[in-house]
Amino acid sequence: MPGTPRFLTLADVAEVLNTSSAQVYALVRRGDLAAIKIGGRGQWRVESTQLEEFIQRMYAETRTFVDEHPYVEAEQRPEA
Image (cartoon, rainbow, N blue to C red; front, side, top):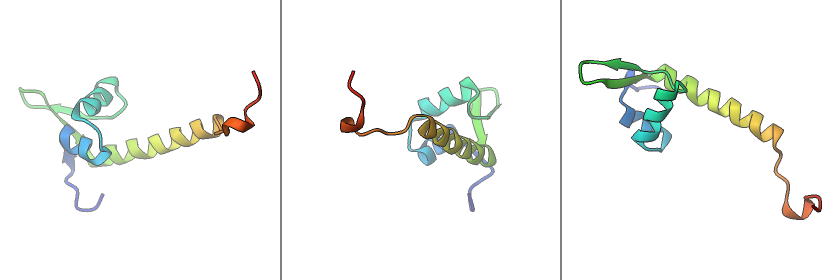
């Protein structure tokens, strides 16, 4: 991301992803999004390159999901 600082706060990441800081924190705590914890008060920072890698990984995972679960119109679904 041109012009982006090297490290972003969780709030910055939440803004980029258009989600909440709590959701970003959960991604970090689960290990889905790499981050570092700095300072005695435990401030989290996400490197901008890690955020871009996460986004690309989510695109790939979404593509796999879509390929494995094709959308079927209601009238095309087999009768149960």
